[in-house]
Structures are given as structure tokens and as C-alpha cells.
Image (cartoon, rainbow, N blue to C red; front, side):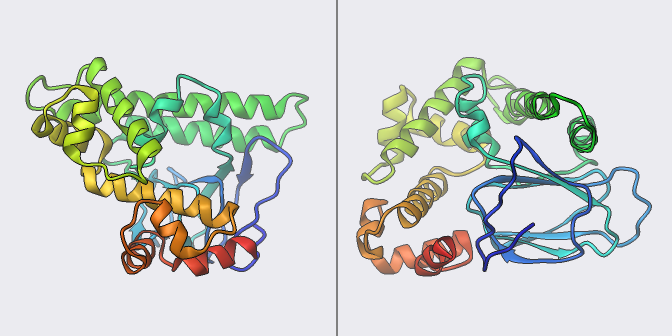
Length: 286
């Protein structure tokens, strides 16, 4: 990990960057890549690692996995037992794959998968991570391609979990149908594409043909966020892009991202990202 201020400008000439030894501590930083950290399942260490993602500190046990999504401020608080491994990769890896694209917003609602809650999923995903570490240390001619295959297998397991397990909370049918899940993906895409406008739960529900009450309940069960929380998160993400890629003023960016006042923008951005918009731009430019 090469740290440049709080913005970590990751540089690696491979599809997946593998880290076999995560530092005992790494200060608060962020980057544009996806990072997955896992506590080695058969570790005998007594000291549980801790990682901060945005405003929450997660204590990880053997077999647990933690997900950091692009732009999220995070920190290795403690890994004194050195029993963590990690992978890093660009979200662009999934952009051209129609199978994965509708699930990306759903994936981002996860920050931790607990081994004691979902042992089969956690073990399967960690096997894929261990395989990627092994491949990158080999001299195989097509090791980058092999790593991608393992990564896709890992996220296929993840996607099946999202599709088949998270939606079992629906009271009407015990599981949201594939049609309902597709509608939720449609709603996520619509919110992301129009977050700068005055969206309401009622208007989005009408857009996908659901009643507001049913949409509100199923959206939370499927996506993991209440409607307003998800809309706010999309506005913060849009603001991140504008802060990084344009020279527009922070006031203009706040309105272009759907916030009604600069004070609200500053407060919400810090709440979700752990720093102010101006600090975020400074980190990025740094």
C-alpha cells in the first residue's frame, strides 16, 4: 500500500492486487478501488482485528470478510495478530458484465459478512481469495486471467447470496421473486441516474409500478437501506465524482448533487465519508 496523504493512489499492473500480509495498522485513507479484507479462517490468534469503514468500527472474527467500496474512508485500526489478507481491484472489472451490473448497488450495502452467520458463503469467498493470493505468487503465464476467474466465482457466490438469502424477509411470499428483485434493481438505477432531482418515494414507486407502501418495505429488505438513506448515499457518490473530476465550486456541486443547501451538503457528506467536501477534494488532488 503506497499512501499519498489520505488518498491512497493505488498502482498495480494486474487485474487484482493481492496482499498476503495486511499491516498491523494503516491510517485513515480512501481510494477508488474495491478492497476486501478477510481474517484467515484457521487463525489461532486471540486478538481480533478491527477495521473502521466510514464512521463505524467493525471487530472481525476468524473467517469474517470486510468490504470497502470506492470512495469510502477506512482504516486498519488493529491487526496486531497479522492474521488478515486482502485483495484490491477496480470496479471497472464488472462494468461490462451484464450479469453483475444490476447487483453492484446491492453489493455496496454490505460491509461485513460474518462467518458465524453465513459460514458457507464466508468460507467459499475466502477460498477464492486464498486462491488469488496463490495464483499471483506463481509464475503462471495467464495468472491475471486466472485471478479474474476466481474473482468472478467469488462474486457469483456473493450474488447468489444477495438474490436467494436477503430477500427471504419478504412477508408476502417468503422470498422476493426474480421479477421483484429486477424491479428493485431498476429502482436503484433510476435513483442513481436522477438523484440530483426532487425524487420522492412515491415518484420512484410509480416509476416501477409499485405502491409506495409495498415499495418502501421491499426496497429496505432487498437493498438494505431505507429509500431516503439510499437517495442520500447516491447524492454523496455523485458529489464525490464531481469533486474529483470537475473544477466546479463546492456550492455548485452541492446543488448539482441534489442537496438544497451547502450546510446540509457539508453535514451529510461528513456523516457518510468522514471528511468535508473540501477535504475530500484536497485528498483526491493530493
